[in-house]
Image (cartoon, rainbow, N blue to C red; front, side):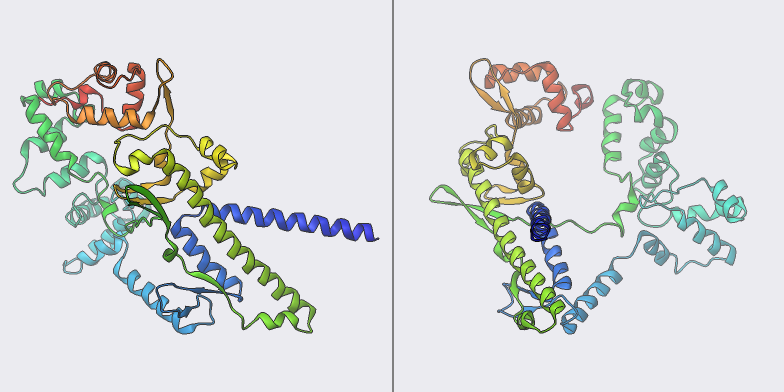
Length: 438
């Protein structure tokens, strides 16, 4: 019997360790925003956990129902923000307030608005919408221009061609050559068949490229400008500053609230009721695990970034514009941890440096073996390629082979034309034929 109990206890211990390990791994890979949200959530589940905000003059703010005033303030703020940021359809409806519409028109416009997707396009044809809604197609056709007259320009378009035309027709002064190209020769324009388009329209290649520049400034998905997405704010987890010319790394402790023990409930761990004692004991263990895991997360991030800083010192100090080749496996070997630990550590983490903010994974780059024992980082090659292309004559852009030749002559880096093409595509840089200006 004792052996069975011991076996059960051992299995339970292994299960708890496995669950804690999984949670610790999850905590490590959280971004700053995700970690803050997670800490807010656990206060709702564990009455022994409170959060102390380090910029709050040592005042504790509870995110659980125990602090009603804080909750009300939070809810009021959410309501205020929600009222300010409506949906695209709300934005369109507000613009229709001053319109004098018949009941049929109002109904037709309401139906059409429900068929506008988040990009601002009409999801179905007017004929299909009319059939589904049991309305006259002619009446809906008359309602559509009203929607297409609203802001932002391009709303209510049925395809990309119409979306571009709706925006071009709002320009002042009007760009009639551009309207003609999009209206009558959209396929040739989309295929970038510039010479054929020039023959069809009588426009010079230079004029066509100017039209292309104007159209690039338009919005292919006008609806995204309204109501669907908030700006993403990047929060750096670590800050690198230069002290006496050397990189110094600091952890942003102020980003997160401090997890503190709510001692009010601790005495319940000695309560007569066995279930109460077990509950409080479990929550106390959870508090200890959270505190330990947060400290481990901090230490791991600092250790990883310190090793990165040793290798990328010249880049961080500004004495080199190029990163050295570096893989996650190398950092893992230097710290005697698994490569997956490094991957989780750098996931969605940002570093503020004297040169700007970077993702932590930015400092890793594949290696390119050169003729001798020399090794070059692929990111360094991409940087050199970008500089080369930015300095080219727009009327005579470099071909992929010309870029490969220039890298060999000027930088002593030997890569094939195919590698140049691959890197160029990864950088989202068009081929020389598409970069050429007339």
